[in-house]
Length: 379
Ligand SMILES: *Cc1c(COP(=O)(O)O)cnc(C)c1O
Image 1 (cartoon, helix red, strand yellow):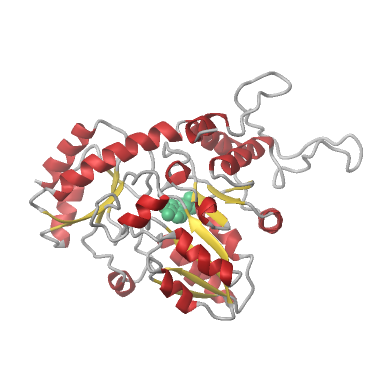
Image 2 (tube, rainbow, N blue to C red; image 1 turned 90 degrees about the vertical axis):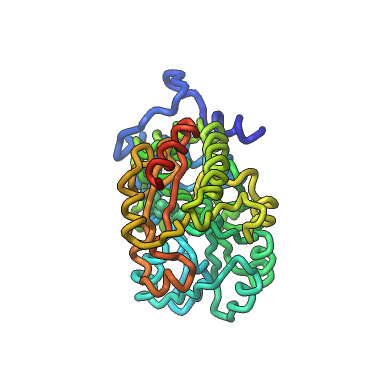
C-alpha cells in the first residue's frame, strides 16, 4: 500500500462489538478476568490498552517497521531508549539536537554514568572517529532542530552495523510522510507525536518504532516498569491525526518551499536554513533520503540585534509566538530564549545557533496570507 492509503487505514479495524469504524477510547484502568490469569490479552492499562494497541499498529505500519510503542511524550520515548544502556556505556549524538534531548542526556543520564559524545554527524566520518569499545548507541536527528542540518542516515548506518551499535533516528521533523529511517538502516525511529503525527497542537505524545523483536521486548519492559504510558484519549487523537498526515505534509511542504524562497529574496534577511535549497550543504543527502523538504525553516535577519529580532517576533499575527511545531497553524519561535534555552549559550554558539535565529513552523494556511504576515512583521 502507498503511504497516503496507509495513513488512513493503518491500525484501523471496526470495533468487533459495535462495528464502530473508529477505535473507541477505552477509558479503563483494568480488565475483568474470567479466571485467574485467563483474560483476553488485557490485564492492566499500564501494560495494555486497546486504543493504544491500535495506535501502535498504525505507527509500525506508517514507519515501515514491525513494532510500535506509544509513550506519554517524546522525551519519555527518548528516556526509555537510553534506559537500554548501563553506566559506562557511551552514546554518540548529534551536536545540534532538540534542547530537551540535550537536557535529558546531560542533566539526567550523565548522573547515572552514561557518557554522551556530541559530534557533527553531518559528516559520517566524525561518527566513525568517535566510536570506542564502550560505544553502544548513536543518536541522530535529521533534519535537526533548529538549524536544519542533514545527516546521511545510510552512511551512519554502515558504521553502526560494522560496530554492532544501536542506531536511533529522531524523525520528528520529517515525519513518516517524508522519511522512513528504518528502511535506511536505523534500528529505532523516535517521534515526538506531539508534532506532525498529532498535527493539531492538542496532545503531548511520543513514539518508538523498530524491527527487532528483542529490542521491542526490552523497550516494552522498560515502559511497563517505568510507567511512561499515554492515555487512551491521547492515543485516539494521534490515531486521528495520522489519517490526514499525507495531505497535511503535502501542504506544509508546498507552503514551506514558497516561504523559504520568499525569505531568501527579502532584502532584510541574511540567511535562510532550509534543506530544499540546492546550495544547502545537506541538500544531496536530503534529496536521497527524504520525499520532500518539509515546512520547518530557520532564518537570520541582516540586522541581528536582539531588539530587532524581538520587534519582528512581536509583530506577527498569523504566526503565533510559541514553542512546538508541526500543527496546522503557523508558529514562530526564538530558539535561543525558548526551545533551546536549556543548552548553554557558548555551546549553542559553537554549534552555529546564534541568538538572532528565528524558527518558523509553516502551517497549512494560504501561503499568500502567511507571506503578508511575515512581510509586515519584517518590515
Ligand atoms: C518536541 C520534540 C521532542 C520532544 O517531544 P515531546 O513530545 O515534547 O516530549 C523531541 N525531538 C524533537 C525534534 C522535538 O521537536
